[in-house]
Amino acid sequence: MRHRLLSLCLAILALAVITAPSLLKAQGPPQQAPAGAQAAPQGQRGGRGGGRGNQAEVPAKPTPRWPDGHPRLGAAPDEKGIWGSCCGSLSFDPTPNTQVSQNPGAAAQPANAAAGRGRGGAGGAQANQPPRTETPFQPWAKALLEYRRTNEYEPHTRCKPSGGARQFVTPYGTEIVEMPDLQRIFIFDIGGPHTFRTIYMDGKPHPANLVPSYYGDSRGHWEGDTLVVDNTGFNEGFWMDRAGSPHTEKLHYVERFTRTDYNTLKYDVTVDDPGAYTQSWTSSATMRWGAGQELFEYVCQDNNFAPVLLVGEADKVDRTSIIVP
Amino acid sequence: MRLKAALVFCLLAGLFVTVSGWAQEGHPLTGVWYGDWGTTAANRNHLTVELNWDGKEVKGLVNPGPESYPLKVVTLDSSKWTVHIEADGKDEKGQPAHFVADGKLENIGSYNRTITGTWNFGTTKATFKLRRD
Image 1 (cartoon, rainbow over the protein chains, first blue to last red):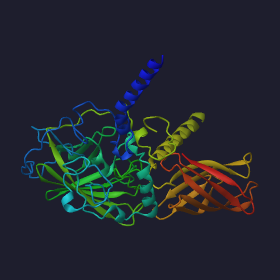
Image 2 (tube, one colour):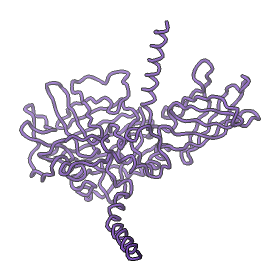
Image 3 (tube, chains in turn green, orange):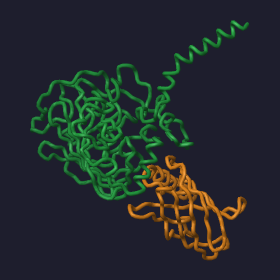
Image 4 (cartoon, each protein chain N blue to C red):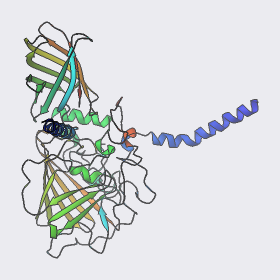
């Protein structure tokens, strides 16, 4: 009898030793968990931000162009490709001076540290804007950002759309589809609820009395080789970036997309939100081309563990559904 | 007539649900708050407060409707997440009264965050609790 008990104890101990590392890993700090984390089939994620497959970067080539001379921002008819998919979809790390970041107001880092060291590895973003501490937050916005850093209960993790620049921080990359005949450009992301936004290229202004929405209203035009997109009409239902920068419905920003070569898309954004910031400010990022990759079916609501993983220090979270509060 | 009233109600209800769904992650005070105030646990008065951040200050209304009155002062101390509210309204007997409320904003990451504190007027000491909807 005593021998049996001893054997049982040893078996339990062995089991604990075997499983402890994985349990500890699963309980890691919230910021380690990918937003909207859910189990994805092997070979589809390709690491953080990876799309289907994980192919090597294509050697540098000139910027592909449309017959009218404009840079082609998406894939050509005979190819596949998405932005930010290879080694990181513009992930953000708030650690100052050690990490690349793309988010508005993100921590600065040495210029030579920008490439290839993000959470997503090579292809991460480059921030050349003031350090996070210098972002012109209004006091409440700064306090709210600090709160969010310890309570990462982000709408994105609850399968809400990620509007604004946050779209490029969603996992698994983004796809840009240009449709000159329709005078529209679509940007698809799948890391959240599989959504997209439309950039109207018809030269018309923003509609009056916009109903606030996650993606707002985007109006684009070309300035040389740069696509300039004016955005307004956002709701407050999303965080502006992965770090949790607050915004209000007064948010207005201008994006500039420049495909500097085949593999590189430079992204600059000027943020203007008098509701949350004392002045406008800018940030930059670089997205890398994931040749041969494409977006895949991802259903955030399926088996979504993020709400549990990202609650942080919040002692309670009200929600009507375990998936979408 | 009943059908018309029902349609209007549905329209207003739908509008309210939509509006309440917009402002969820911006300024922590923005939104419609429901709750009560009173001098004892048994003596409670319904309280609805609508707050809106315009980029510079918070403005608001108590009990929107025919008996509503605007808030004169609403300040948020984001270092402590405390809220100070002042308004000229009416007490339980319908008499004019100057309210001074001080509360603590809690559960900020939730849609349904709360403010609890004191709701005083004249020499009357009361408490209040509001839950954002």
